[in-house]
Image (tube, rainbow, N blue to C red; front, side, top):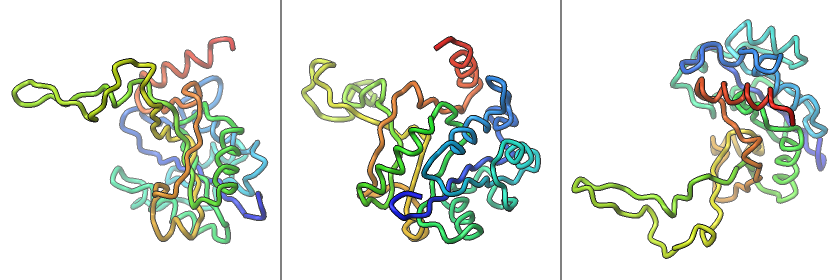
Length: 227
């Protein structure tokens, strides 16, 4: 609880995965991928409860063995490739009611820390914002990006006069690690993103998103490298 608000942590992990089969259960650094998110969330001082939404019995069993509550099985209609994340979050809020805020934690961000989770929560509630999302600074600035026309001429995405890299403004992208929203607000808007959403900046080193086998290989390398 923070500032008198009840806060629900939600880990979403469906069984199907095209890029990496059984991705959420792949062993990395001695535990399943989903275990890194569960461990970080269970150490949070601000989450009142952590639950899993999954359609997969094996994922549910593994999550429970690692200390994560799994009070329901997600319906198949919400587990396909076309299912939207908003539907999954709202389904959880209806099954697990009476929370003021919901924090979405995806297992594909295993390097996010407990401090990041609690930092996003504090930033959202301290700012009295309806939502907050985690971000990281991009490697390549869109101010130096171009579109190529049919005649092969190039056109800058943004008209600007930045001649030197050090003059470019900092630009950030969603890193997928932590999302928080006021529960009733999310039910109405069905999104974490609005003009009133605030951002919590994370370092790139904790912003890895596991989507491809090469991402998984890089994660294995990071975890095996002495810090």
